[in-house]
Image 1 (cartoon, rainbow, N blue to C red):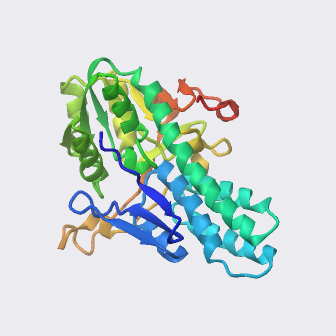
Image 2 (cartoon, one colour):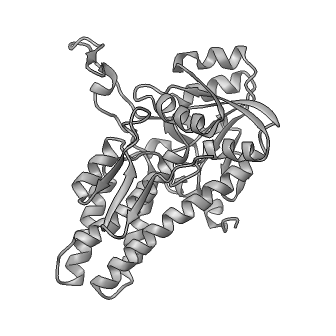
Length: 347
């Protein structure tokens, strides 16, 4: 399998490098980021996207901020890095992993006594987040693969693959791990309007892996679940609260349809995606720009006077979820998030 590394720290250039996902599948380009404003733009524009990848992006963003900060006193240095961290956090309010990665690296820096030591600690901790994420995805894949029949067809939404993580993937990691075990898996990938992450990214990843993938429009999903033999729906998540799973807009509809047709609905996500504090009503659903809906290429498809709603995510009630696959195992609702987060990861 040709599994990508999505983003990484370039130690020689003291910068972040990443696959620019807005250009796929037509162009494979490695982006380079050397300032916080540009990194915020890359995150906001979805050049880098996916909950686990955003956790890594948050860590690398703080590392970059530490390299760029030129204050002479340690306290002013840390204040500057924290401000940059808050600026990055605000780019994607629904996904919890971004803030988690930022806070983890800031916390590691704060125990140091000098600027040079804090810079080294920031880079080391960000690298550790990326390493752990890949290890975590493989564990999720191994646990989730056991849920799939030896010969099966699964449906997925958006992109929860290597591109959404540091490598391997969560939902697609389950599929990859199942294929690696010798299982025959076919995938139905929903296109995922308006930015087509399923058509552009999931299909690109699976096709490169030689895994059978068929793209459908989002509006076909219920019909396909009803008329074709779909063995499971599996998606990723951007935040999981005690009462809901937040994921790419359209996920809720798939969960309702899967429940109605008696098809298991699985969510694959690392523990860093769980929110032990908030409930569904406390989470801000990101609303994105009008032109993502109205424009495709150079053509405008919506009259200027018509209004547009463009929610980036929706919330799926937890009772529609069959199970959540984490690096610690498979958990069926209701899930005690605080107890889950206190468990050691499976090595």
